Image (cartoon, rainbow, N blue to C red):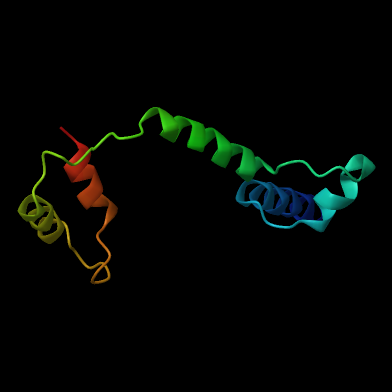
Amino acid sequence: MQLLWNMITDFIQTYKNTISGRYDSKRVQSNQGGKTDLSGGAKIKMSMYGLYSEFDGFKACDEYQDSHIQKAIQMHEGDGLPGFPSVDVFVYLVTP
């Protein structure tokens, strides 16, 4: 059971390192021919840059004034850290 648990934990850590683009000696050692490929996280980032380029110049908050945003922050402030709006503020503002 301990061996299985260690193997699963190792797999999860390798997966997280691949997605986040962190150095992982196991991945580097298994790389064949010394060729370095982009990690999973780098591939995702490149895809997102392609997606962002489609929306170049798009202004999502043109219809909001500063007073609307300030009111949303005050409504959803809760017990979060001062100066860091919660995710609820974002959801409130982007939900039609």
